[in-house]
Length: 101
Length: 201
Length: 304
Image (cartoon, rainbow over all chains, first blue to last red; front, top):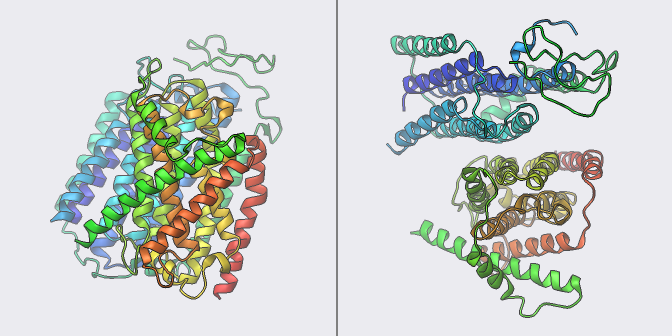
């Protein structure tokens, strides 16, 4: 287990997540892509913390902030999906051609 | 040695289940494949002796993915994937972007001389984290807390049925079934109870 | 060697406690029905044999993989709970400095597996049971987080081993009187019992298990009892001092306390009535959650 291996794994997770976020039509699936990208980021953060920071607690703090970002993304994302669905009965990105209403 | 084997197995699990998220038909399987990916990353964090982060990842993601699964069933036309359907756009571009980001990041990782000052063995990572959160970085921690509170308020405001300026569904207009066609689905103003899905494709 | 012994001991205890719990359930049912039960100790065995010999009926297009995963996962989560519990000073099968948080992770995964169990048969009543369970299971889990953190405060540690050691003078059930009752409510929810049985209840004709038959049904019921044992062991360690006690050896004390908690949980599950989901939501968010805050504040003041 080396830092290089960890970072490559996290790059793979990030790449898959980016593919999902760009290719999926459904809002919910799109958010899954974003979550997977954040998953890769989390792994990279923990890897850097363990291998280069000599246990500096600020690295763990960053990881906790990433988790908070995931929670915020999910909550606001779902709220927007509900709001959009209420207005347009739409659950795919293509249905949103205007930001009005 | 044991740690290495575990690490590679968990990495393979994380990547494979992350990949399955976008390949399975059933939305519930996709959601929980993502959860498995998170759990594998949490276990890797445990191997790296991030005791709290690793376990907290499992804990948080189980809840988050549970909520995600509920939304999947609510919003998807075909949550169980019983009828095959394709819900993707700009497919080639997305594959290209994914592969490019993976290759680019990997090249950057492989060509960089990464500093190595590993974790001192037997360190009290949990105690360190606690003193950091409620000591030097308290402001950051509290800001994150207030942000989460603001998120809760914002989510309720955005999604509540009684919107800020009257009913949330006032003037609601579903998209047409064809490009520029007549609005699909139920007429909200007419108050008809039939909710038909007007997915728009 | 000692590890093998510990694992064997835990499995022996697990089998005994599953059988005891099933017997107690049969006794309670007979007592409530007013007639009593003929040889309640054999009722669980008879039922198990019946289910094993039954044919497995399936619905149209079930999610077979998730059905199996939910049963196996429920079973495994109960086992993890049992393995996190210290059976002696510094002796536990899963040694983790954050074992209380790990138990919290098990709790949240229980919601996931119960949901999957309701999702997999592709049947309406089962899915309704799963949805209802998620609605109740998530807030009741929040409550347990506060209660567990309160119990971790006097120990100044998230490790169950330290939490047990911190109770050498006085048990947490006395130090934090609100803790154990609130935690037992969580136990009722984790094991799908009585007032918190929104998943497998009779008003949905069996809820998530409505379509389960044959060996699947047996597996699910056993997994519920495994989870009951795991929960009781954790509760006994967090609030009743776990293996601490005079004269008798530590593991025996742990077993006695676990069985005591289990008896209370089973009794409550037969004696308390179930409320409508909406009213239960109100009770949890308005009544029980503030109580758990109060528990945490009291524990914090005491720890200062």
